Image (cartoon, one colour):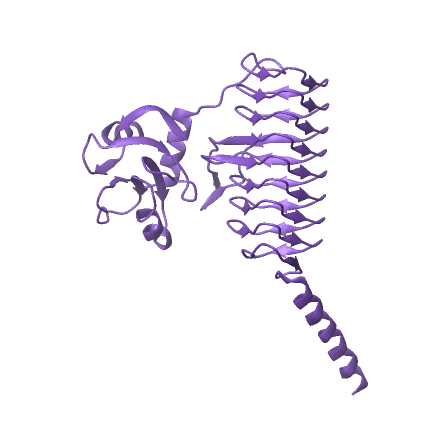
Length: 308
């Protein structure tokens, strides 16, 4: 997320009570996770495996738990616990705000949009024109919805990211400060859940159609004109390019890319990034013709074994 104004490195260091490496006036514009970080942002890292990735990222400031050589043009914040200090930033810049009504005073609703009974709209929600929001839909703070969008009963937009760090006494939650963006002409079925980003936005692009009981994880981007069938679960930080089709009960790993015009057949586990323009099946995922041929060969092998 971006700060409301430009902060200095010293101001941020004092805010979370850590030491810093770099000019005290070094400009800091926001904070983000590694996959969405931009110039001017803070990124956190607390495991040696990811030090290089964080230090070589687009981030201008690295919140890190070890004193290392500072890359040229960057600054460091030296923390005993970067995970907790990242949460401090979220609490300071985007604290939880309650509302005492089912439709927050700050929510904005466009012309000819229909809001059915028992809908909850949180703070700063924006809904465009000619939308239909069916009963018992919950839309958390800061969600932005375009024009001509339909959301069916029981769906929830903007719940927290599923992101935890294991500690000796249990799990610590990484607080979410991002949101959800739904572009024009999107249909969302009943009982769907679309989680908000940790520091960026989960985005559903224009023309995409989502069936009932679909889960979309934090910071995932779904492209234009995609079709997603029932009981599909798309993990966090996934990029789905335009015109992708998911058949029912598909599941994906996090942090992968599914190429344009790919078709993912039912009950496939997408364990890795796949190229566009092909049809895929099975777990681990393979092109469908190859996978089905392998399955047929295995079946024949078993038959031959029984004969022997």
